[in-house]
Picture 1 (cartoon, rainbow, N blue to C red):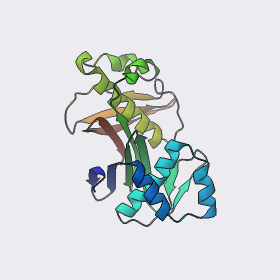
Picture 2 (tube, one colour):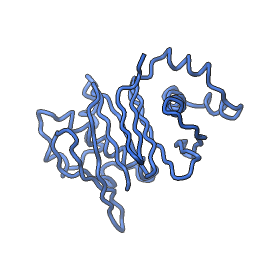
Picture 3 (cartoon, rainbow, N blue to C red):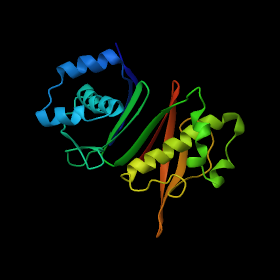
Length: 211
């Protein structure tokens, strides 16, 4: 059975989105060989982080890459391999993982029926971003903007917490393979990035590569 929902692969970046079923998790965990230190770390994680912990290792095995995975003080994963960076995201049954020669940030979010993204938009949507949103597709725009800012946050290493003050998204249209300009805003300077998104079933995938 194929659990892969989306694959992107070029010379410097691999992105995989797959469905993480419960039986896949239990089966893979039984086969996974962990050191005592890794077992203790795994048991200390939340349910969501445990799923991501296993998901990273599953994907690395799936694509045939043998790399050691470590975690920094913020429990962000990184690969002990020269010139390789990793980013991951998890939303309900989907896990997205990106491995790149460049710094990369990735996010995946499910279009929820409870309209939660609309309820929390004041926490991340700037006034200059709200003016270009088509009200007929508000949820789509909000998920993409949230995904871009989450990807920028991961790209920057989790330094800036305010999605209102430190991240900005330029006007864009809902169009396949559309490149969206976005910014990390600092006190002394700003830096521009290009974000890409794709709708995968009921999820939005967003990624940013810092070339």
